[in-house]
Image 1 (cartoon, rainbow, N blue to C red):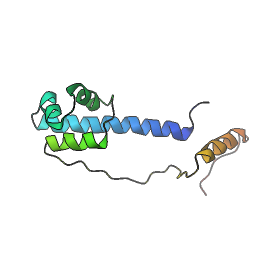
Image 2: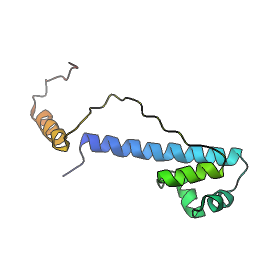
Image 3: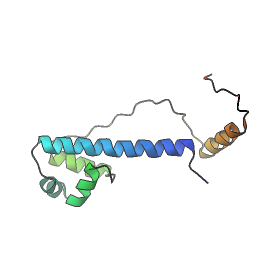
Amino acid sequence: MGRTTLEQLIADRQRNHRRAIGEELRRVRLDSGLSIRAVSRAAGIDAAHLSRVETGERACSQDVLVALAAAMGHVPSTRLFPSDGPRVRDHIQVRRIEALLRTLHARWIPRLE
């Protein structure tokens, strides 16, 4: 079975978030005049891992993010913003709704309530 629309949205947002975090880490590191080797050594992680995090290829745990920020004299911050996506509490509900939408007549137009 393929991915649901919500699963695809989540995967896209995760990829974009990894890239954004990596870009921010790289910007802070370069602005501080620090090398990957120096930051990774101070944070206690592998330099290759930091390199992959900065390019968005790898996600880093919250603990690693805190260690990297501390090594560069920063504090990470997190905020959650409301989105236009549905608040699904039942994982089966998504599949049922998408199956129902596929069966509707082609002239049906979705509208907000």
